[in-house]
Amino acid sequence: MIKNSFNPNECHPYVRYGRMSDPSQNPRSPEQQFAMIDETLRRVGFPWVHVRDYRDDGITGRLINKRAGFNQMLSDIKSGILQVDLILVDTYERFGRAEELPALRRRLYNRFGVLLLTADSMFCDPTTVQGKALAMVEAIRSTEDGRIKAHNVIRGKRDVARLKHWPGGEPPFGFKLQTVMSDRNGRTEVDYSILVPNPETSWILQLIFRTAHENGWGTGRLAKFCNAHEDIPATFKPFYAATVGYWLQNPIYYGELLWEAHNTGIVEDRRIRERNVEEDMLRIADFCEPLIAREIWDAIRALRQERSARIKAARARNSDASAKLIDAPVPGLALKYLLTGLVRCGHCNRAMTPSSTQPYTTQGGTVKRYVRYVCPGYLEGACPNGTRVSEDWLREQVVGTIRERLFPGS
Ligand SMILES: [Zn+2]
Image (cartoon, rainbow, N blue to C red; front, side, top):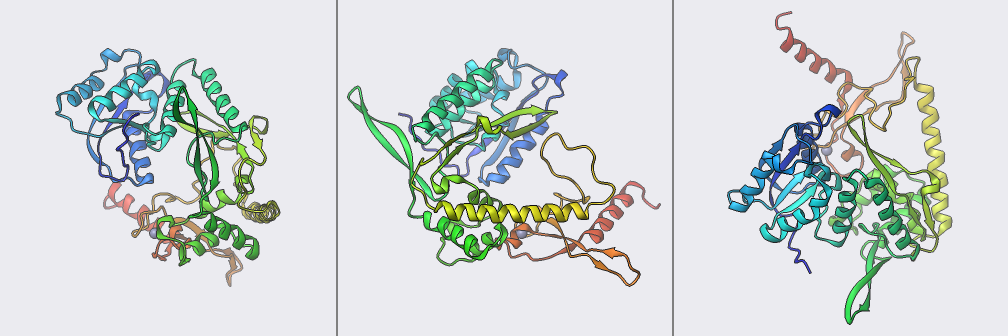
């Protein structure tokens, strides 16, 4: 039994490790890997403290002995020069050959109290049961013949799910895990977990569904409603529209597990994640105790589909002759406005999103609309900063400043 004293909310010191895997394949540079680590860390919000970086440029994972940066890091840890709790990498593959990884990970942890965490698992703790399962999947994925083995792991998880046992990972909001013990060789062990309603959170989830059903509200309004609700403890706040939307469409709340393994892969230097086709999905009815009646779930779904069809139709009407002809290969952000993603809320640091007013007709007869950046947290009631910044004004200021820097005096 491994003692687990890791609490991600403490100020753990960490190093970043980056590695150029194969220069001929346009790999992500160590700088890009570090940026990914920072970005993920910002997103999960852990207060960890950066100590230093180690890197290897242009060396493949097969030659572990020739990786100077990697070996320097290990020897600094062993000698005690480097006092850190965590080594952060962007993906598990950065660490080298899969066969060596579990042993290395164990040795780092058992002998030096150093955890190896990856950004693509949102720094999931590898010493928990879920973390071990994830680490296993990651290790398998990083081998060349990993696809087949990863498939077997997924199949194993699907078999578990068919028995109505929770296949791993965080339980959905409103539920908690209940472990079922069994005796094996005279020892009592955790056999499997099932989902049961969590009395602390199930009522909140039911409130959201009920409110969505009775008032026909969209996810933004529901998130705002929850954030302002006095009976909901602050630990569950803030609520976000995207999360609420995710809950409203999850069939687990009427008791059905939808197992949809995602495919991940690297395409054109970007990590992509796509849903499997319907045949690869597994639906297990009566998987757990329902929190919501099926009729209510269906009614909300119908309402949401109708609303999104309306929005799509409105967008199609608004798009002009310069509509895109080529679809992006991966889901991403279409940069209609120059500064999208770069304008940050001064209060909460969320990326402010452009929003447009209703179109109106000027005296000259042209149709116009105002576009302003606004903090999405404000719209959801999670941030008090309600400032709206005019898109064309800000763009002119920024472009003007850039022009002045590049061509002074022109
Ligand atoms: Zn804000």
